[in-house]
Length: 244
Picture (cartoon, helix red, strand yellow):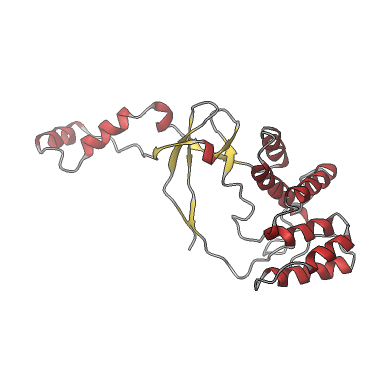
C-alpha cells in the first residue's frame, strides 16, 4: 500500500510564508508497469521532485531541508452553535471542542490558509530551479537534472494503456542534450550511477563508451542485469529510450 504522512506545515526560507507538504512513508510497487532504460519506472510517483518545489506564496524554488517545519496541518474545527457552546462550558468542555476552537483561533492566518507546495512539473520549472542553485550544490543539481532528463524522454514512453505519456517532446532538443552532458559530468565518479552513465552515453550516441561503461558495472544482483540490456541497445547503435 502507498501511504502518505499527515500534512506538515513548513515556513518558506525565502518569503516566510507557509505551505503544506505530505511525504511518502510507504510505497507499493506494481508489477504490470514498465521500467525504462533511463531508470524511471511507470509508477505514478516516479520522477517526483518531492524534496523540492515552488512556494505557493512567493513561487520561488524551495528545498524542503531548507524550510522550517512548523507544525502538523490543522483543519478548521466545526462551528459550535450557541446552545452547544453553553453546554460545553457548563460541562467543562469534556470533548475538547472549545479548546480546539481556541487553538485554531490562535494560529497565524498564514498557517490556516497554507496551500500545498507546488511540484516542479515542466521544463521551465527545472530550468529556473537550476538557475537558482548556488555553484557548490552538485547533489541538488544532479537531482534536478535527473528529473529534467526523465521529463525529456516522456514523449517516448507508453502508459499501461499503450498511449504516449506525452504526445510531443516537452523539453527543447538543445536543452535536453546539454542537460544529459552536464548530468554525465556530475555522476562521473559515482559508483552507484554506472548504469545511468552508460544510458546517458548511449542516448548521446557515444555507443562505444556506453558499452565500456556498462561492461564495468559491478554485479549486485540487479544492476548488471539492467546493464546487459542497455549494452545490447548500445551494440545495436540504438539511442532511443526503451522499456527494459
